[in-house]
Image 1 (tube, rainbow over the protein chains, first blue to last red):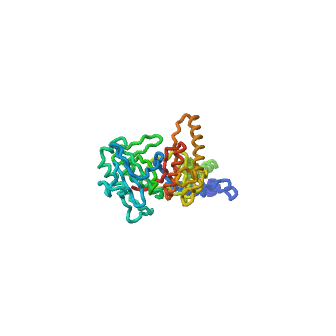
Image 2 (cartoon, chains in turn green, blue; image 1 turned 180 degrees about the horizontal axis):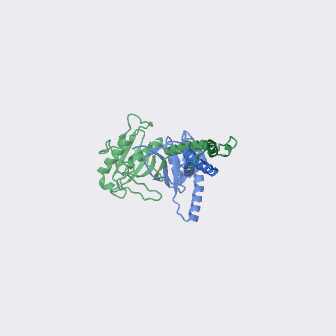
Image 3 (cartoon, helix red, strand yellow; image 1 turned 90 degrees about the horizontal axis):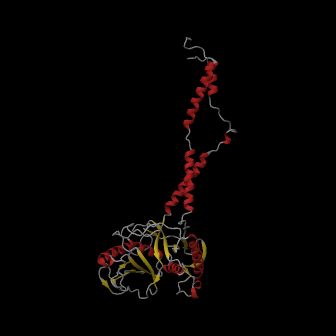
Length: 212
Length: 188
């Protein structure tokens, strides 16, 4: 092995040292660190905003006006289920009659089957969606023969004109299914599937009450 | 103390040693830095993709104090239907202003016969008539059937009557397949 003298060592060290660029020579390179910071921040904000705007749609046919009395008509052996949304709660009709609280017995006209909650929820709503869902489950058990028919998943929802739209959407949710995702609603590329037992009344026809 | 194996280095030895050390230092220098170029490529591609998918989304709705969507447990995806937006202060179709609302209700002067008992909103009816003709024309040219689909984007605090008037007016002009747009999220 060759023996380097002190002068040769110094020369080797000097020549092998990476050339340090002067301040005027570094200006040609892009400093990407601030750029990266911006990109990462924008990415986080975009992802965060996407998480808050997930939307969905509830398919409904064109609405009709409710009859003025709000009485459910008896049409042969069909269930002809109607839910009327009033300020005080829900009136529920099936097979030509009105249901009493608990949704088991028949009651007189205008009886509130599902009264409002004593206290409003976090969004200021007093309509009792959970009890309405239980009522719909009870109806499906009581009228099993009618529910098994062709119109077994139909429901007419009539609403008082002054009831907020959010209550109407909550009601459609409450009568549709007892477990989220139980009903597969019709979409552009998919057929509807209501065969699940937790899928109750997804085919809602909307109406508006004119005399309440 | 020189031996036979430690002969004096020639200028060629010095050059070889210089190149060897320079290569070694260069390798060490490179291993210290993170190579961020692939990461940058990836991030820019993700960002562009996200922004483009957001801008082309049918659910690109400007929510604010005047337009707060109701929440629902439904999971049906929104389609690219004609959008009717009913906020607390106005009705618009695909971003085009149609009429103003007062306290969430349509002024009777904007109704057919200037009668509050009627459901037809005249300025909306005029626009929907044009939209129906345009949609039918497109359907005929493209060979795809017109399905009468329309997305209703309404504020959750509006009186149901106002939403019904919009649905009724649209339904009278060929659009009878409504998609009520909601926010996913509320647990049953």
